[in-house]
Structure formats: structure tokens, C-alpha cells
Length: 181
Image (cartoon, rainbow, N blue to C red; front, side, top):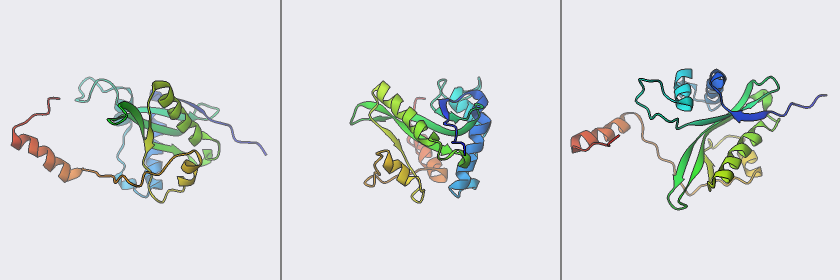
């Protein structure tokens, strides 16, 4: 019996985008919400590597990504993340938006290596936190606990989207203010 190849972790490259988009859709399927996932390769390319010349987005990418690759340099897992900021600590941290490892690569250490890479970025840059959310029924909870992650039960997530988001944004127009961006 041969042991699985330990993946290598590296920053995502433009040629990885189709594989990462496919894995995001696999993750949405796993989380029982495939109809909510609309990510395209163009969107992810713009978010990771900068917008096209006609974009209204900021010129610097706000999303970062790492991939776990197999022996043929093919992505088998990914971590997409961005910076957050703690006003109490006075420093940035990393918010992990998504972590996913394809089923065939699970057990190879890919997930742990992706998280270790982000932890290393935090330590080297002086960030105090690496944070993420997890759907409550995900069996990865045991894995996260095994690496020392703590469940933050005292914080309640809120989300504003769809019509409620647009209605609140309309308040800027009716109040006569502009955001300045």
C-alpha cells in the first residue's frame, strides 16, 4: 500500500482559478446550497488578481488565495481569505472565507497545511487572529478542535443582503449623504 502524497501549499495563480471555482461549487454542494453559489472564473480572477480596466472595484485585490497541489501541481484544495481588523487589538488578522479539500485528498494533511500556512502569515506579519465560520453540522469541528481552534459561541452572526441591503443603501440617497468612495 502506498501512502498518499503530501500536498504542497502555494499562493493561487491565475491558471488555478478554474479548479478553485469548481471546488467552491463542490463546497456549496457539500453544504447543501448549490443554488446559492454563483461564483465565476472572471469574478474570482478579478478578486484575486485585480480588476479589469473598466471595473468599479478597488485596484488592489482584497482577496487572497492559497492552493494545496498534488505531485502534478494540480489543485486539490484551497483557502480563500482576506484581512480583517481588530479595533481592540489594534492589528489586522486573517478571515478565512473558505477552506476546502477534495474528498480524494482528505487525510493527506492538505487542510492542516493550508491552515498552517495562514497561521504562519499571521505570525510573520504580527496579526493576532485567524478566524473563520463553519456550518454547525460540519464534521470538521473535531479537526478544528484538534489544532486548538476555539468555537466562539458568544458572538452572533448577522447578515444584510438582498432587498434589505438595497433598502438600507437607499437611506444614503434619501438622507442626502454620500459615502465618498
